[in-house]
Structures are given as structure tokens and as C-alpha cells.
Image (cartoon, rainbow, N blue to C red; front, side, top):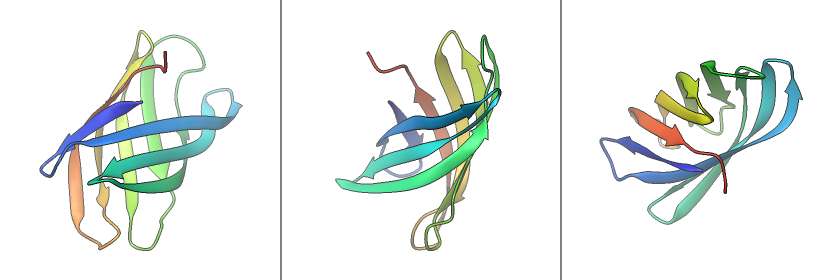
Length: 101
């Protein structure tokens, strides 16, 4: 669970991993912006153990699609993201994820 910040309002978001095969994974992301929740399937790569590079790409839902790239350090992920909203508007910013307690 974490928070994403871009030029708009901050968004709460969470990612869940449903399938893991070594450094590859599949799952889903939920993003809450202005009280509206958007859910998308994602796939990507991340270290199976330890720290390292994380790359995540969402499926395209309408005109919405997101790309994340960042670093896993001590269980927390710091990411930069870019993509498009459901209306096709370009977005970019930074996001952090921390393990659910």
C-alpha cells in the first residue's frame, strides 16, 4: 500500500501479487483518486530476494495504462511512473509502496 504523487491530487494505491515465477510476477493494482477506484491487471519484474530494480506495466483499460520503474530497498519500493488516464490524459509522478502491516 502506498501513495502516488503527480501534478494532480495524491492517490492512494495498492498492488497485490497473485503469481510469482522467480523474478517475474503478475497481479493487480488498485488506485483511488478523488474517491474513485480504478483496478488494473499488472505484470512485471522484481528481485525474488534482496534489493534491486522493479519494473511494472499495467494492462490497457480503455485509454488508461501505467508504467512504473523503480527500486526495491529493504522491503520498500520507490517508483517513477508515467502513463495515461481513462480519458487519455498523460500522467507522470512518483510513488512509494510499503509492505502491508
